[in-house]
Length: 466
Image 1 (tube, rainbow, N blue to C red):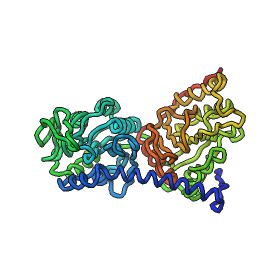
Image 2: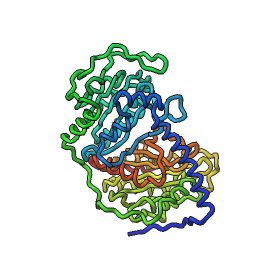
Image 3: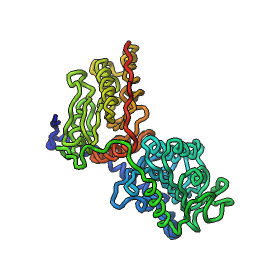
Image 4: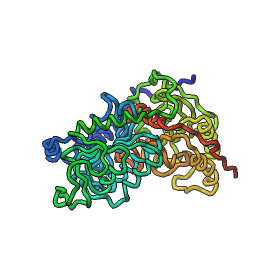
């Protein structure tokens, strides 16, 4: 056991200043979250409730196991765009009858649940997460808005079938566009009597309301499997479908069901979130998220910038690759390649902890505006190759403003989150911006999700030798 220490002093004025800055960023994020939760606004929420219908988050709460966590994904998608915050859809991961599922719920209070480019991307990302991690998908559908111009949602969701990932669809109301294909594409289809309608053509929008053109009469649209009496009954039937899947995780369970908490207060993560890379030590983060603050560092004497090593998080073994810089030295690249080879050989998921800054590269000797040389590219190639060939789950946590790519960055991670940063706006590829104090919980939920599928390492991640 190698216990991590800490050099942070809560009495240091810089400590309090950094904490205050992060709290300001979190306040801006919370404001955006409130806007997303408000849906289409009080008028449309009241009208929706008056019709005896539930809001998307209310539907999700009734679907999930009581008091179980829900990891919402991309909660503030479309923030600061021309489209409503949240992209008129709620996506995330939660337990249904003890089975971790991806849940997608349209928000009909926002332009009738209209699908825009952000909605389409958010749904496609949720479908990819379901497919890659072997998580059953539950669609809570009510979308009478026009289809997005950014490709077909139905096409992405239909790929789940080839991966043998089951899908359940509950139709709550008028449904059109790509969403109209979901009942037929799903393994199990439930419709709500008197409310579920599937539009045969896209609706025409007039003013702020959505006027439907000819529809299939209320009742089972096409090959519906079950007819629910109301929304609550529909959610009960969806839970019943998941229970009958007889679904089992294929990955190994955590080593312990009662892991030890980190030895250090997570409040310090607020200070670390605002810290410049020159002062940032990733070990301070690891000391506050790993079980018992226990971390076995790999090759600590080779490459001072890149930190690599092994630990456990909520009982799951993990590898960590952490770097505050954009470019790595040849020694650090070799170290990272070797580490990835070992992670794949032991089928250990890897957490990529990235801290970028627009004002500093990882070496003091490199000029600020100098571009990468041919030698840099040649030294980066083995690591790029190793990351591409690595097949164990990759989780990415980004700290600080992201100014470019890094060889240690996983191109297609299973999950990717970031801490808040100015202007506290998530990157398009992020699965969400999280409170730094929630990092351990979020990564723990992600690790549980990735172990729904078998965790297989590459037989050979490949080492390029110039």
